[in-house]
Figure 1 (cartoon, rainbow, N blue to C red):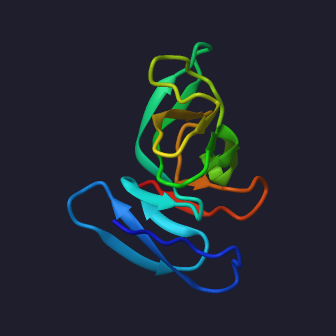
Figure 2: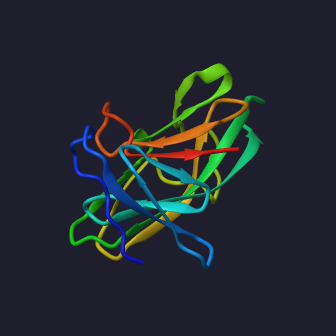
Length: 153
């Protein structure tokens, strides 16, 4: 599946093609951020494909409620790509924005920061200290407008 991503200019409406993990592809046309659902992928200009596959409620070692968000990265680009917790945030309880944390350490944890060579893949969960998530946000450049938003129903 070929994908395109919006140009850096967030004021212009750009086509975004998203990939679904099911056999039928879904395409949407939107301006930044790309609006996605679970199972759909966002591909950066550099060729890093990011997919949110599922969410689970869990309890951390202190007994607090945590949402684990399972993500997968595939580097189809020609240069190394950064996969970092700092790229993730969510809209949680009562509309609060939460950054991803490393709260549950198990064999499914995504490393807090990793670099993928071209052709590399990595998957696992990022954690949010909240009881509910309505949106997941992926931002390529820290502190800027999210590039992709997954709606969680």
